[in-house]
Amino acid sequence: MPHIGADVTLNDPALVHDTALLYGKVTVGVGASIWPYVVTRAEIHEIVIGERTNIQDHVMIHVGFASPTIVGDDCSITHRVVLHGCEIGDRVLIGIGATIMDGAKIGSNSIVAGHSIVTEGSVFPDNSIIAGSPAKLIKTVDNSAANLRNAAFYHLNARNYANGIDRLSLENIKQLQG
Image 1 (cartoon, rainbow, N blue to C red):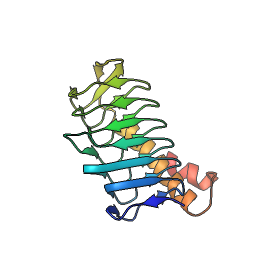
Image 2 (cartoon, one colour; image 1 turned 180 degrees about the horizontal axis):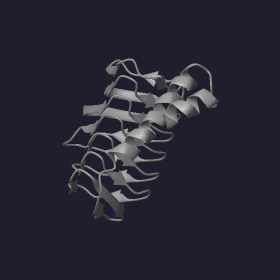
Image 3 (tube, helix red, strand yellow; image 1 turned 135 degrees about the vertical axis):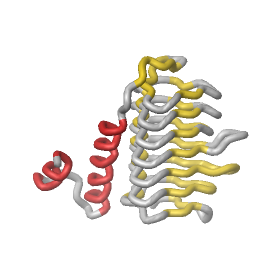
Image 4 (cartoon, rainbow, N blue to C red; image 1 turned 30 degrees about the vertical axis):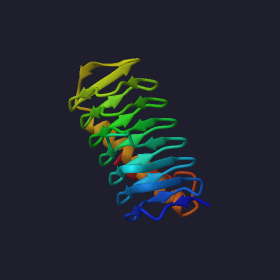
């Protein structure tokens, strides 16, 4: 059974997995998906998860002492990511195992490479490709189309999972290609 605290607002998400733990002031946008073993904690400030954003398996989202955690629309926060008191723009992909720290801001249409560590207060503009530990701007490219496709895949997958379907059909694949 998931834990969904009294201060959590669910705005018709596509999926909140049974193992998710949502504590404190958390808002989940329309069509968003919360996958297995996600933990959110907002004892102060708040966590906002945008529309159609997917928060994948084993993600930890916490607020900073001085900052909320805000995640935009159509984002993919992939497996084992840690978001801590940061702001993520729209259509951003955060790669597997990355950590984004307090006060950091990732601009829209960006990609953060897996296992990167974005240090406190780092600010990256829209269309950034970010990698490393500590993370640095590698180049500037508009990744909005690819990031939106990934978010759409997860939105479709979440709708299927919510209906007990854990495999994509040929019709689903055609939708995604489409």
